[in-house]
Image (tube, rainbow, N blue to C red; front, side, top):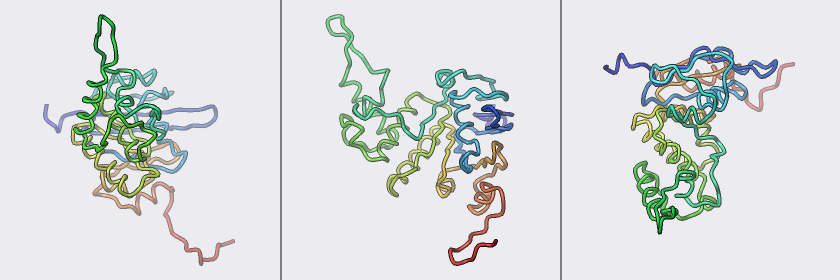
Length: 262
């Protein structure tokens, strides 16, 4: 099968979700090719977080279909999504501050060995594998024995991404990975996104930092009031158009010196 005839890595069709009287999603359609980076943007309450949670298995939709590599799937929880090689890095990162770097990378699946018939934690193997994992992703953490509470925001983000990538995902969803990071740390995270996508992983980047879209994304999907209102190739749009689509009307900046109309 050639690249032209390959199905999208992700296809979401008619995804709907209601919370009581609130319609959070109103028939969302979304496609991501293999190895592509899709920027998913919209104002607060537009539905982008709900779409992400549906794809990661954290939210069960009321209607709609999900396909991974052309095969229809359904998720009753995050474990189902993981079995289909879908991972999500949440904004809060879900790291354990009191564990070291290697412990966070292998939390719940630590390498073991037997001593006198007893299974014990193989610390040497765990730290060696952690160093190899970080090196393979170009992540610079000098000591895998340092507790993550002592790392910078960018380093913590990198650890969370590395842990998700260690599950060998086909799809990686990232929720605001560059929020509240210093400039140098933002650059490192964006480079990590490029590295991950170059390995064939389809990345969905949820962000309010619109300038990041034009650094790493292949295409953009804009959500507004529970619908995706536009899909654009990155080379066929502009920051101004994306802002217009997010706010749902022609955006005209107003200076502080201009009087407000009554």
